[in-house]
Length: 437
Image 1 (tube, rainbow, N blue to C red):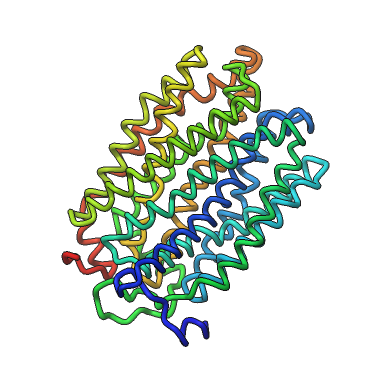
Image 2: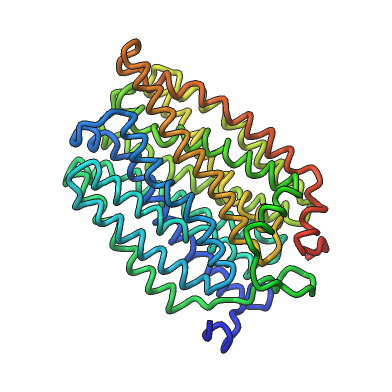
C-alpha cells in the first residue's frame, strides 16, 4: 500500500491514457492465462478419459466441479480481501498460485491426484477476475467501463485459443506436458505485475464526492443485492448464459471427436481458430459498440447482451443437431464468436451497479453465478445425461445430452433484458453521476 500512497496511479481521465491502457492489457494477459488453464481441460477430456479409464460423469466432475469447488467457496472471501487490500498484489499472488498448481497437474498419475490439483487451481483463480474488474474501474469512469472491460475480455479469446490449441501438444508429447507449458508463463507475469502496476485510489472516478467506506461486510452486500432488481436479474442471466454458452463449449471438443469423427488435433485446431480469430473479432466489435453506447442510457448495455444471446441460439441449435462436420463447423463459427459479445459488458454492469467498496465482491457474486452454471451444473449434468443415454444412443449420447442446452440462451436473454428496467436509478444509487463525459 505504501507504493500507492507515495505515488498516485495515473488514469485515462487525468491525461495518462497510455498507462491505463497498459493496465488493461496486462490484466487481459492474466485473464488469458486464467481461461487457458481452465479451458485446456475441455480439450484434454478424451486423452485423460482414455488414459485414466474414466466415465463422462467422472470427467464432468474433474473438468468443472473440481475447479469450481474452491472458486465458488473462496470467491467471496478473496473479493472481500480485494475490497480492502492491495489488489495488484492479490492478483499477482493468485496468478502465481494457479500457475504453479496447473504445472503440478502434469505430474499427477491418478484421477484423485489430478482432481486435487484442479481444486487447488480454483483457489488461485478466485483471486483473478473480481479484483481485476475492481482495479479497472478505478482507471476508467462509469461510462467508459464497458469499453475498457470489453478490451480486458480479449484475454478470453486469446486464452481459449491457447487452451484449444493444446490438442496438438497432447497428441505429440502427451497431455501432462500441456500443463507444464501453461504453468510457467504465469509465474513470470506475476512478477511483472508487481513491478509495473500501482494501486489506485478506490472510487475516485465515480463523479460524486461522498466518502468511500473502508469495507463492506457480507450482510451489507447481500442486503444491497436483495434491494436491487437489476442486480438480481444480472446474476440470474449470467448463470443461464454460462450454463448455455460455456456449458456447450466445455463439451464441444469431445462432441467433434465423437459425433463429427475429427481427430483431437483437428478439433483443437478448428476451435483454436474460431476462438482466436472469431472471438477476437467479436470482442473488438463489442468494444467499438460499447464506445458508441457509453453516452446513451445505461439500459443500452443489457439490451445489447440480450440481443447477442438471441442471435447465438439458432447457430447453437444447428451446430449440435447437424450430422455434417462442415455444417457444424460453419455453425460454430457463428455461435462461438457471438458468445464473446457477452464477456466484457456484464462486468461493467456489475461494477456500475455496486458502490466502490463493494465492487470486487459484487463481481465475485457474478463470477459465482457464472461458475455454478458453467463449471458445476453444465459439466456434471451433461456428463450424467451422456452416461445415462449411452445404452440407447451409443457414441451419439453426448449429442443428445447437449441438444436441450442449446435453447437456454433465450432464457438468459430474457433476464438480461429485464435487468435494464430501473437501471438508471440503480447506477445512481451506486454513486455514479449520470452526467455526460
